[in-house]
Length: 349
Image: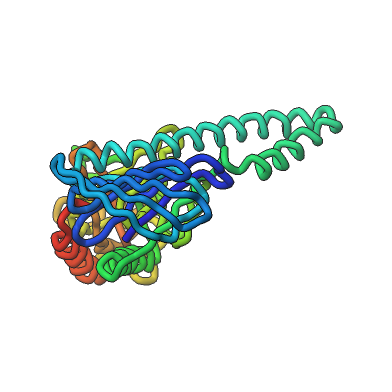
């Protein structure tokens, strides 16, 4: 699998990483000149005459130089290309270039949004100013290179199989009637007033759907998990994290998903795919009977939900509940399959 990112309508630069099952290679250069590091560690320099198809290639390994003069079809876009090697630290350094580019784009987008908001509010008090937001929209379309990064992927069979499995996992997870992200937990000293629950959770609805990041244009569809102020984009090679203030990324090998279940006292409407295992009372005695001192006491269903905890050594720790507990075993099987497929690669994905 390989991917390339570049600013749209960028006449001077770009980014390319070539990935295969055996490793990662990369190249960078300008029109007529390119330097490449191959997956096997060899270095290659290519000098060409743009538009002619004639190129001179020098290849070296361990200080020994091997030169070959060849005829080849060469591209004429002269894009600047980067990439990574099979060394993890070198990969991360190269990917930092991508994150830096995306961060610049998101800053431009945020500044544009602020001025757009101010100009729209101002136009309410002074109508002729409505021309300002119109002009800003036109300028954004004209100068697209300052607002979007292009990200293109090419898959080999192994990566296509891996990415299909990743998308199937996310598709099954999104198929739940309800998904929640757990914001915080509170421990109860007196369970009488909590329906017998020892803890309660503050939760927010979560959406998982195919959605392009506003700062990315890609030739593939990818899933996005929306939770509070975070957007988690599941790209083929890494997860991209956008919290509106900072862009970061995680290799999938740095993450682990832990699967479990929880018996949850559901005071909201019960999802149609949820399993109700029993019922309790709003105010309950230690023996499970209703506390008769409360006239407004009523029964509450207890639902069994599946849980996924997403963790990484970099501080990511997110807990999610999903309504269809019966999906948990399939989700775990798909996740285990993803781990096994990653082990077949010679580098960390």
